[in-house]
Length: 498
Image 1 (tube, one colour):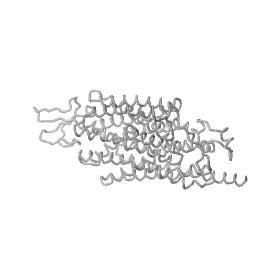
Image 2: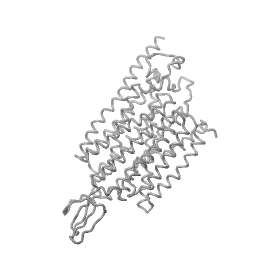
Image 3: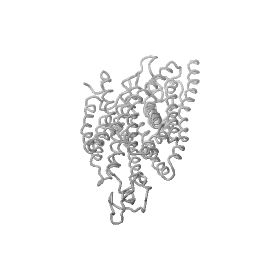
Image 4: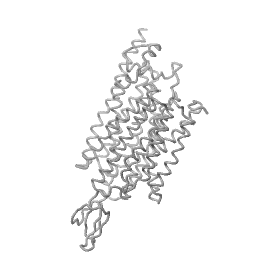
């Protein structure tokens, strides 16, 4: 079997989906992981001891019969001579902040890793990229396996390397869409769906933990099964790059270079020879308004998404009344997030539907960009609705919040990759997608400041701010719509003149 052979593209797509499902987005299962880490007592030494009468019941808020608060090293201390019982407050602010910092750093490194691997992919091709990702992922899984209360620092590199290694499988497998001239967006959505659903791996680890399988055992198994990705690396995927097949007829989609030239050059009505001569450079593509606005769009929406993930455990503990309910809603959230398996391909189908809807347009630019306008605007709308539902802080709305988040996240990442693949040259995909993700990662580091703000005041203020702030992202689809209007007028005039 020749690597990259279009005859086996469906096999490649299925295998790539399974890779994304098993190893891609484990970092998004933070809600399940942090529940395990708290139950194991990680960073509990940061919390104060609360002394109580031995006849009083200790609760997570520590408000009943509190005599004094002091810092100790031991987790539990009985002072029988004075009739007091001391236990650590498991939900103290310092502990929550340290765990939030670990998630913030991991998400930032997740994005940095995507950028670095994008550079590697651009210079050395798919095979080298995936081999580097395999090493990073396995080291990260082993770090998470040997994380303990004696070595809590392993959480930072372990979680970061799991994320950085995992996203490489999304970046490389999404390039399979180039083997599908029709339905390429659906393939991108399929990969993003597997990436979404991979958060369920952390849920399986949590379920196993609650049934007697240690976290260490689970992560060692994960590191071993990851070696299966080498099959695709050496036998399915090309060593270098995928290339889009050329368009041969008027009904087929035009090459990405044609659209990129129109968006990065002032030349109008250039023929094929002129387009080849004026093929845009990577620099011109990156400085185009479409790409810059796309980066801003993703960065703002991703900040909202990451803050939701990072603060989910604390939010549930604030809204709900018992630890069992927190566990229940954490599981529900992960089950719903796993449904990205279906919603991300659906997002791709929606994009393909609009592609067919505008396929008869005389304007090449309009044929390529207008199918993205409605999905981009819909993504922003889903985010705002989700943020508005959170403001109620009512447990009955949590299911709706999770569902809206599911669709929002699926559309966001499907379009993040889909626009770059549809508009810009295929050989630039890895590096442009990497820059998109790392920029979003840098912006997402503000989530820790938001978390600190929420701890100092209340989460209601932060959620209200984010709900209003998300409106800015409507600028991206509105700009694309105006670009299509201008292009349609200009190109139609050129055709009539000829």
